[in-house]
Image 1 (cartoon, rainbow, N blue to C red):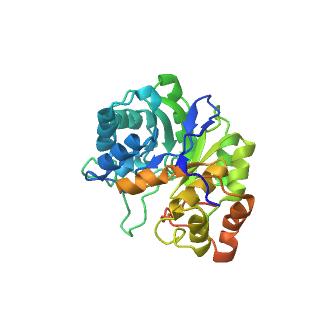
Image 2 (spheres, rainbow, N blue to C red):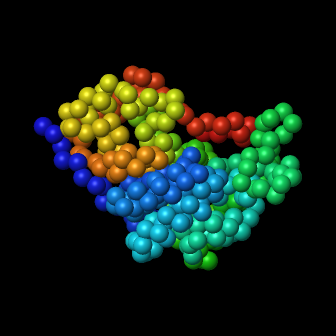
Length: 311
């Protein structure tokens, strides 16, 4: 029997008291006009949550689409992220993002990676880049660390320019170090990480639940190198419900209590990704087991040595 697909309007409450829509539009790799078109299509379709980042280099067009939509700002949930080269001064970085977005505040500001980068090799003044050493490896700032960055970020909600703050691409060990640090006064509101059926991150999600940190999934449809949407089990469930594979995967994330951020620059796909339905326990179990039968696949694992990512 086919399930009823409908636009997902479910929300969850963050540990800061603010409410976040459970399905949002991811805007990674959406630029040169694509970001404007995707955000415009999303807001018109009913999305009220847009996830961005300084390093996506599209904050201007994302902000323009938000303003042109005519939707009252208080009805929207907007996220952006602190890039690695600006971890020593997150307040300045946030103000620059707000200027590009044309907004007075963001609802959520995330530390994009737990890895600060040095800026001395940047010669053109462009901090939204990834400076590398002569050997091509990232120029990691070993005299700074994410704990110091967090100590600065946790003060930002007092400025009213970021209602909530959180982190991205952190491991359980990174979170433990942050939470146990002497200067920590604030539990991150959110952890955003790669999550899809071939990288379900069960242990990490359990840890976050214990500490009242909301998990968000980027690349929930699998992305390059993780063929989630072509998986026979996913397609079988989709066919059973007259849905598409994207609807199945987003529904799986939502049903796990995860805030899910599908990304697309195709207006029709943007509209479709907001539509979810209730999966049966058997269907949830089938998807939950995919990473065991197919093997785990992480699609976003940049070299940031000597920092050990995801350990």
